[in-house]
Length: 191
Image (tube, rainbow, N blue to C red):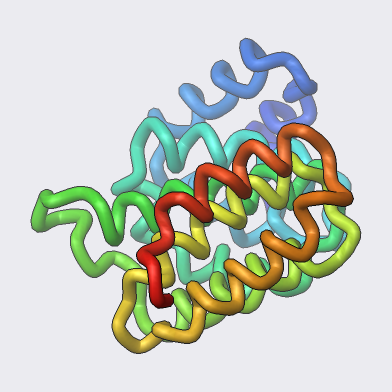
């Protein structure tokens, strides 16, 4: 069960960045609450799902090591999250994790994602691109898939991503089109 003080702190969170950062800062000082937030707040059934997702996004950005410790819970629940506001934060978390896994050269961050976690992320990101999601979810999903495509075991990702972006971009928003162009330029030719 969600500890009462954590529940109160998460209930204070609103769409303002200041409130999200205040809650994230408070949770970071009590690292075991990262697990509690994922365990009890980050479920589709929770009234605190959106607030939890917003705060977890900031924690992942500020203190990724705290998130890494419990991210298995994130990946267990990720395929079941359907709320638009929560999905935006989930996609941003996926993008950050992929960047840290594939792009950062620090030993600590290298290989943070297991094969199963990368598989779940790949499936979710493609689902977000081919279903009717907001661009705020789809843009980070594109970037995450670009990073995931660097994996030799996922040599099929780039051709699929290219097909989806090329096909969908003309009918999407300017933000979607801009991110799609950026990703398409990065994908190596012949892939």
